[in-house]
Length: 159
Ligand SMILES: C[S@@+](CC[C@H](N)C(=O)[O-])C[C@H]1O[C@@H](n2cnc3c(N)ncnc32)[C@H](O)[C@@H]1O
Image (cartoon, rainbow, N blue to C red; front, side):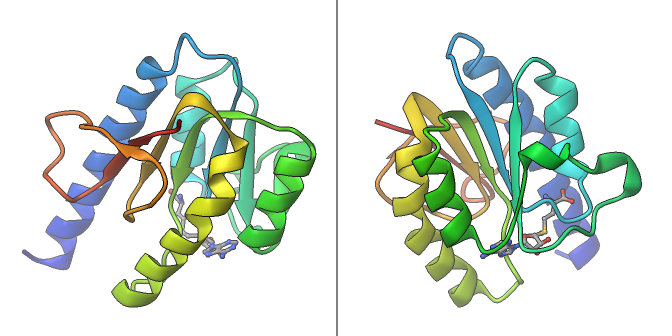
């Protein structure tokens, strides 16, 4: 598969996965967490699909498209470890976390996701969903939408 095709699969998985998760969490009370603002594409999609939710965003730098800059009060600029600890201290609770970190080095990306799992768990409401490109630990893995190839994206329910 070419890198172009791989990117198409990734984007399709993100759209289908986030749409599915937005519907699946509709009955829960809480906020949304976007981990990895980047250009702001998935953040923009989340705010379109979940307009009534507060969407917190973590990124070590603000480099998004000008149309996709989160409100200042919702943007946590810094390293994820410290920002997640801060969110937990503030008692923020998420019905959905979308994890989109990664530098394209598979071993490093996998290790970081496993390490951050333990810091994501305390900010989730019971039954909340974690939608992620990387495997996580400490949550219950559930099937996502059928359109997404096995292992392309991961879906977890918080306990
Ligand atoms: C793949 S990009 C996100 C793409 C974005 N979701 C989009 O759709 O445009 C990953 C982002 O995560 C951020 N990032 C990666 N690891 C991080 C960490 N440990 N703490 C904070 N930000 C991190 C990077 O700065 C980068 O902007």
